[in-house]
Image (cartoon, rainbow, N blue to C red; front, side):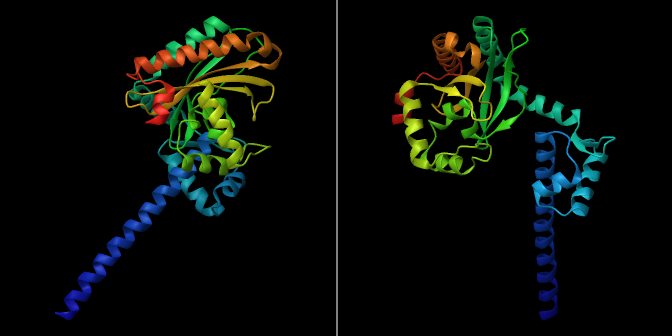
Length: 272
């Protein structure tokens, strides 16, 4: 009887350990895929340093994903994501339901201002560019769809962060990897208070100091902030378009909010 109980317990422990190991492997593989796709072609060493994974372990994961069609190795021996990943992202973007809707508003902004406009969705603590429109003139801001950015690194991120709680703000302040002039929590709190009072974020970029941008938050039917519409303008044209750009971005963000079922004003949403 004792031996049978021991055998049963041993089997259960082995099964549980197997699940733990499998879950860790899945998490590691997904993290590898995210880094490969987010940062473009990279060498095994660069990826190993970023992911803190031993090169043999990382190479094994990359080869498995290559067999399934998610990544590929280029002739210079760097690794990048494939169009399969892109197609999956496009499918997700389409099912979210805001892709076509936000594209209408970025098209309106670009037609009106003749500058690059974007819609960035807030998800998993970061901003992802889900839609954009660009003018045809040669000197313009260029946006990569699908690129994720920290909340503190872009004006669309600021426009969203102003409506999140203090815990999320503190986390965002601690994530300022791309900011050469990071600010502390008190400074960030003051900045977010100004953005809430104004209803928009604006200023020159942290990652792209030659660009001026304005962004306004978009809310859903429950009053939760879900993203932000924004426009990016080369510094040489910023002063001329400053007021028009802010007015247009706020207007389109308000319109998109209403189309998503939102009706509360920004101040009412904050107080709730």
